[in-house]
Length: 383
Image 1: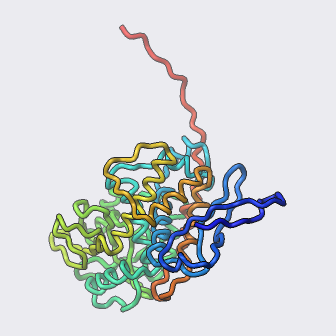
Image 2: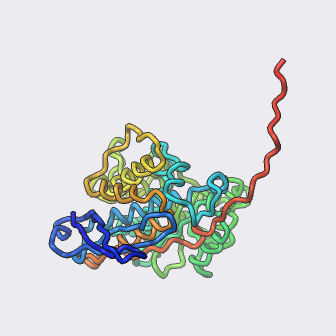
Image 3: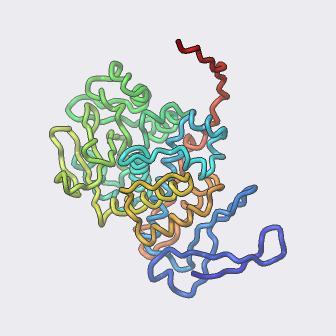
């Protein structure tokens, strides 16, 4: 821990900050820490996540990145009803407010949403522990797929109600993109069919038999520069994994108790190439550590009891938790931005650098729900 003196904002007097460090041996030298993000808000503390002049270790950087993904998922999960209850636009939601309305049930809600976002951003950011097995699965699903880095489009029919979401997905896929289901036959144009799938289960009657269940898609996966897109379903628990016509890949964490070992395999019963991400020494170990850190911080900020099954995070993840808990009045977007910058610190091994992953525009344009008018309550006499 290091004490740094800086000029206080708007006053010509010194103020002392106590700076926490996250990192391995590189973080223990004598290089001065510096602020990487400082956002001044009215009546709110500055949001400060830290970096060293020497790079933090890979695990510390990755914790910041996954924590960012989980917090983005929490913001994504807010409904119009939630925003009406909070009486604020999504861009102004504060961490304390978010912590009071999010779902914390075990293995659903926050965990499932966070896992889906973390996988998507790990692919977009080139995280080897995720990219390599997914690249292998795509090549197994079709021998014609380009031998290039995977790319991911976040879907989920629940998001289709957001203004601009569908347009963004179709635009990102490109005009020549198409869906490649299993079996022989002509592929399907991406844009028109994805817009039908956005209706959810009700779309089954309108979808072609070969792609009848693509409304269950969480991510559309392809190779860089390839127009072929594969529908993938992402589950944080392997027992929840379901197949369906049009779905090609399943992404789940490794789970020894279900003989679901890390790697890529074909599940004939579901018709899916299943990617099981390694745990505890792979991506899932990292995700679980960051997940428990964020979950515990939400319990603290929202004054909710910590569920007994929440594993205690690692020492480094606890420092992430402590930093998040310092800013109950900061907006979620400010925390997200600070974590994003903290995750972009230069690494010794350039090939393992997680590039910046910008949040899609549709995530931040949900507005406050319209004012709700309710009739005056009237109770009848009980007889």
